[in-house]
Length: 452
Ligand code: HEM
Image (cartoon, rainbow, N blue to C red; front, top):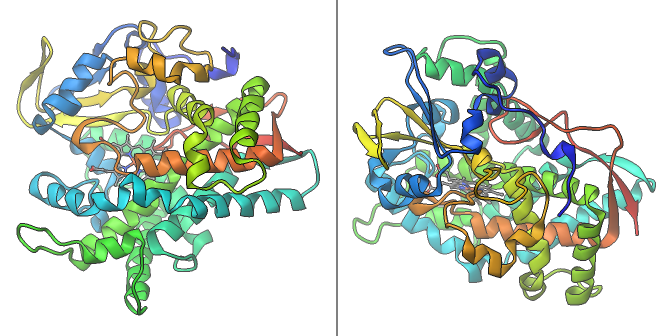
């Protein structure tokens, strides 16, 4: 068990403030959500809705799993996340529109298909180690930037089959802009202000979103021009057909899903990897255990499908990193009708947040919740926990379709990097959380790297 005050990057505010929404919305989540399971911040009816925060595994199970049909992503989620061009994608679709897409896309994410991608993950990680080796020893690198580039490389190859379809630098820059300034979008959505209302930086965000939509359509068109059979996610999208109705995806749906897979598939994994590397840089003993495990099971060989399955401690490290720093710190829902959750009455106008950040640091669910301890995820311990006590990927029918993809990818990348480098944290640097949709550390994540 490794303790460090930096593992608690901010204190919850006793009273929510609009200023906090703009610099780190998580500060506003009620302090009681770390001790109790159901908290409400009352809205100013009818102007703003009540905000309900859930951090009780039983209540969460009701919303995400057993009564999932009663809840949608909700108005605020759609307002923050969606743009004209991606509304019809898997992540936003509801009802029959969602079901057939999910059914059609699931085969691509079967374990046996994903194992074929392990060499792709290893190749992208090795390209990074080569780049790091070319730099001088004991250099400081930005792990956030390096992980974003590496996971982008992975997702581009896995979704599109090879790299070079997207203008990478421009796409990444537009994406970063599109995911920023979430605070303003949250406030505007909360007050029901229309989309076209300007806020600081809104012109740049709108331009970035338009660019992303155009790039997704362009990549699709370029791919259509190519001949020959391929085995990537886009091929699956192109050939997806509803077995009952024969329905295929329209060009709009295809571009929307292409964009969704690229964004959902690399940003979250990059963030999880960034925190993982930083935690390992702090906890040298766990870092040595990972290295020893990799050496035992892979020796000097590249990480392949067989090796990655053996790296159980490496996987536990990533799981524990996503407990302390879940890339998606909350999951949004809204009830279709006035309803109850457990004993609590919930209005259909209320915004419901599954408060993953608080759930993962809950005083009654975890011993020493702010300490880093990968052994919490040993197979014996995991069985003792409620299935909704740990939710980096959500739960129920809308659980992350890319969960196994991400776990294999991240395990391969961590193993490949640690085999060649010792990581150390930079003295005096304390990561901060910003107003970003996901848990991206503000201003990057400097780490020092020492070649082995
Ligand atoms: C560490 C990496 C990842 C994290 C933490 C993560 C987290 C999540 C979470 C929490 C959800 C559920 C949202 C909800 O219930 O409202 C979700 C859904 C989704 N994720 Fe991931 N994700 C990751 C990686 C990926 C990857 C690699 C892909 C694709 C290649 C992906 C594609 C999706 C899609 C398409 C959905 C929507 C599923 C649906 O609504 O049916 N994610 N993700």
